Amino acid sequence: MNAVLKESRSSLRPMLESDIADILQIECAAYAFPWSRNIFRGCLREDYCCRVMDVDGEIAGYAILSMGKDEAHLLNLCVDPDRHGMGLGDQLLSFVLDFARKHKAVSTFLEVRPSNEAARRFYERRGFVEVGMRTNYYPARFGREDAIIMARETV
Image (cartoon, rainbow, N blue to C red; front, side):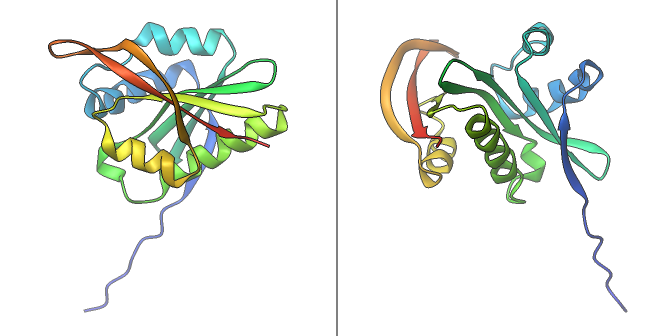
């Protein structure tokens, strides 16, 4: 028997409003408190850097980055839990950091839940460090959860 491995084709492209239904499925699979359709629509209306990772014609992840005068803010980076371990998060993060660099951002910031140890380790391995805390930032099962603010130089 000959085993043939199918090589996946992945590409990054701008997010479209028509992608939101697929994005919401991933968002709901990944987070206990997912973003709403209106939040994604608002990011598109605000002309944030919104990208989707397309793998073999299916959305496998996405990233949303807002730009300020000299800083960037990673608002959301998510990969379909069924596709973890494929390097898609690295590709998405590399793209948004390059985008921030090209737009003259000195630093890139993000928030992460203290309880999300996997995400914290992911960002730490990529040069992000803890720079602060936002109290009661995230909704949680029993009230609110703080957010760790992380940052790294972009240039």
